Image 1 (tube, one colour):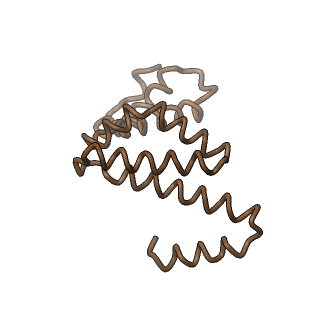
Image 2 (cartoon, rainbow, N blue to C red):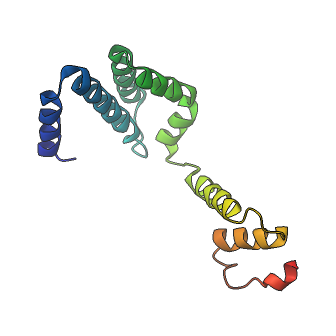
Length: 141
């Protein structure tokens, strides 16, 4: 978001009753801290920069006293080795996760089909471009 949009958002949040606006503002700021940390990916960040950004995120989550932010901080702590590897290498498993999601969606859509071969065919067609249009469903009967 551009600065003027952030200012407008924060102004609107400050107009809300404190019990509503304050937690949203704190959650927004914690999210921005985490995004600042993740934005260092592929930039070869030094240890101090990563440490400072991570500390800022953890500190905001701890000070907020919101269960959702505490759970988020715990998740980041649990996955920290993988997150740190991403920050240094820029390599993710997004491709395999996307393929897995497509396979599960196709499997849900095909639930109840009598032929497991048809389900395999549908999955293969959905996940491999080379296979689209080149598979003969008759081979699975």
